Length: 194
Image (cartoon, rainbow, N blue to C red; front, side, top):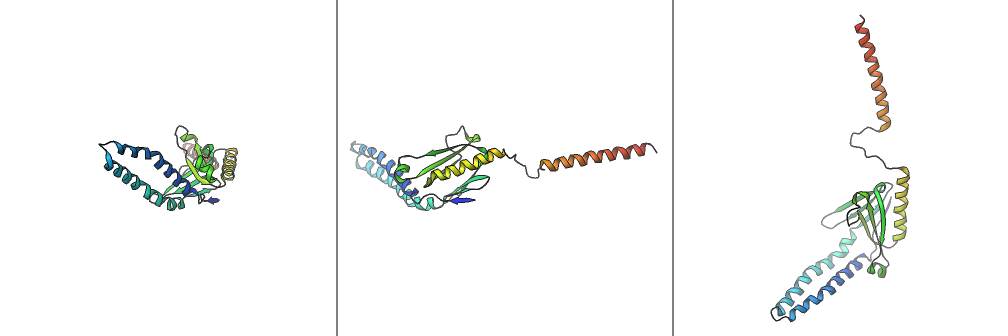
């Protein structure tokens, strides 16, 4: 099993996105020049901005510290969360696409993001699993693709319900049932012939 974490630069990437959102919303502060809005509007705008920016920036490092990725022989697992713990597992035999994304902040920081899509989620916008902040995105992508191909060569493993009997055991049981029925017929034939 291969376990790894995102780059320590991931919180910086998220902080840059927060800064970008704040910078893009600053023109709204210009509405304060409207006499009816004035300084009250500007104070409220700045207050609400600080109300979400400061906690967001304060929680970036602890949140990114909770992110864990794992590749085992059967599935990819992503774990994360401070208050709400989330664990997503994606079986390799369900994977239809492994997408590499590198936005502007990713490229500037030398990071990459892998998005893993499955057939069941092909109509949705979001990926089934996202591995953000990868330093070695090409190596991780290749590891995932190799495991996906290996599982596809083996063929899909049919899901077994709890208590389900494997196919080879079912064949043995069918043979036993046929023998029991044959014995029952013999016994009934002997009783009828008395």
